[in-house]
Length: 410
Image (cartoon, rainbow, N blue to C red; front, top):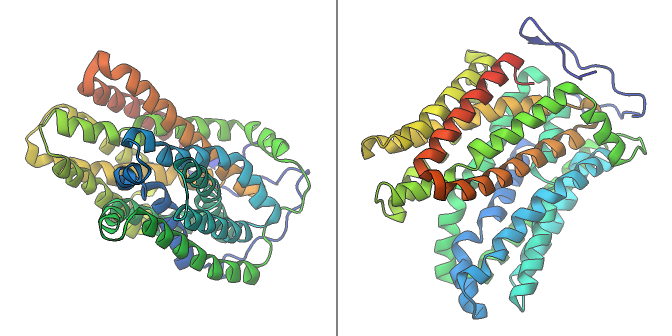
């Protein structure tokens, strides 16, 4: 049975957990959670994913290789980040979510700091992969912890505030990393990131000690937990939806940016500014998520988010006046986070008795969807062009949004 029952548009209490799990008493919803340090956690995790992008030329030059040869420095982090999700999620349920976050933050900081001293490109790639592995135990597990610590009625607003860190990292990491790389070199940039992560691990550890252990005391293995999750029809639907969302919406921005350069004749800087407007739209949502949820409800956010993403992608593909492009990009960022926020909140209820496992599956589905979407886009681009890709993605998102609205997001 699904842990969520939707009746008359409202969520009922979760179903009783399966007998194979013996639950520790959840953190009381009235107890303040360390949201500020969790926001910083999201920022540092997102920064790790973007920090190397503008540094590839510097790294390649330092090791005497081309930018293409240095590209695995970026790919290693992203690939291992996604692959680590199914492993780390059940560990969070086993040892306690905040405890795992604190441990992963310390190890992530250590790997990032060690990257500053990498003697070879191969070692740098290995260290970046390790950093990506431990970063994989931060954001999904933090979302699961927030799910344990809040009521469903307040959860989406809290998750919106938490997402502020991730959105800000997307806005400032690449330009900040590039500027710092010019000033002090790429090694110092990794050193700064590693030092910041190690420093953040200290208050995270203190919070973990203060909150105590909030995981499952069961010795049930990870595979049994995933089997129990996939036995729930609502969970399978939600994981499918987030995978499709990843393939259509989250994989789109790189191709939007390329189309702005090749289709509109924009400079890279101008295209970056247009794409940056999407980050501002996402930031607006994170700052006002509570208001949006109260005003429109989950169904309204799914409708608005789906329609807004369709207008965003189809509008850019239709080649309007250049002056409207920033507005379309802003709408795209706002709409994407509005839509995803509903799925994310529902994801935190897929498996209330083992939320880290549920959110790990959620994050892994999103990651796999992005990878599949990017791969398919690369194959289709020579045949249908940028406009065909964007119109196709818009049509797919329209179908996804219709399905999500009919199913209530789960």
